[in-house]
Figure 1 (cartoon, helix red, strand yellow):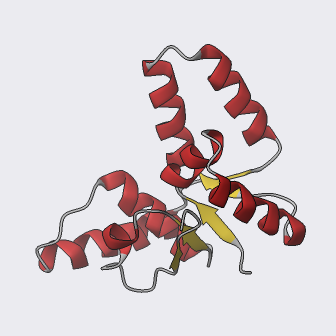
Figure 2 (spheres, rainbow, N blue to C red):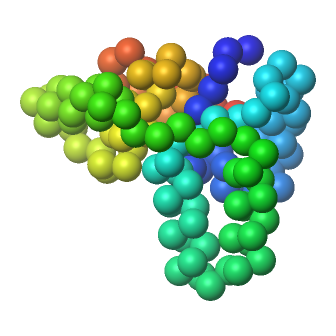
Length: 134
């Protein structure tokens, strides 16, 4: 198993109790002490929970995050994301800014992106992806 960056959708499946995702998390924790999430995923999860006014879930998520690792946007990851954006745009492919930033962080930190949105990320050169929901 390689070190991973957990995408927003997989983290949501984890908190919803998806058995495949939970099993993969258990396997991962046998090898690594913490999971990695991007600051973008943190923003997306907190934003969604605040929109729902889900205060208990916000507290649970923040406790979870406290015991794991948030990876921030660096100048190099932002540069990677800009290159991804330009490459995709030139190919006529459009994906969301948040996903491009997450991909740039994964590439910069040499992490496999764990996502259920494989087709969305497939056009990004140099990005390793894996699906823990299957």
